[in-house]
Image (cartoon, rainbow, N blue to C red; front, top):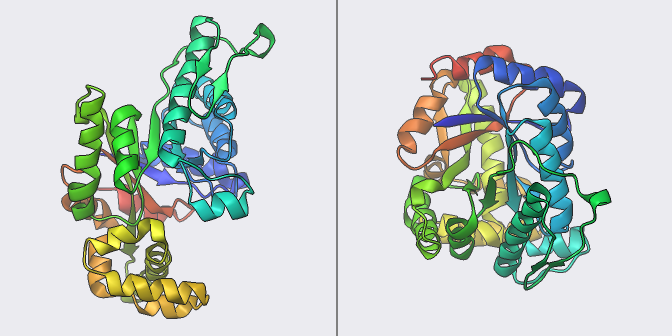
Length: 335
């Protein structure tokens, strides 16, 4: 199982120190989410200051960019990093696409399929010096002159991981993706009963084996050396679970465990912006399903035990920082 560090993209000035440290103590990759910053920017810096780490967008928003924009960004990152880049894509939710980005929301599955196929067509055009002629359901690309063509690179195979929660997107992962990014609100049961079976349906459709598709997840941890530290960590994670569980996109994850009534109440409180009240509704049973709880030195043991044979790589939900004592404790028993 590969272990990736999460990098908070707003710490731009700290990136050289943090990514070098992450590589030094044994992380396999650096993952950056698109929250407040464009994830390609911190990963560009990380590519310069590291030699071996995978550099991962986890995720970059697909529906807010043209596939051509994504193609250039990923191609540039792959060249800069000498083949270490993983393009993680996500759809985001309907409300954010329309109300935060001012863009249209439509046909997320067929649109994401079109984006992936379009990316491969563009990259093949650049790598093989062939005319660009892609016609999909939502996108058409037919113009690529020498002036705008970045040309071939040494590592043209760029893995595409898709963020997927519900059945249809999981099927698309199996059909076209190189991997899946599983949301932080997850459980072994949801992975076994929903994610893996639907990836398998998609992989069979495209004539692939399910083992060809990397399963990656972000794992929420409640951790600390003292009871006080554990309690502080617990309250932070409770708020995250409450936020995610109140969102329609992720409610099926809680539903499979019988937490329907709680998620209904969380949605009501979210509409009223009663954030503190939401945290109080998160039960110990929910924490047990959706997190690992341990001292820092045992986090990886707990993750490996809980997700045995389910995941190929994990990203720790806690962003890497300058607390070297903590991170060395987390990774010291890694095997």
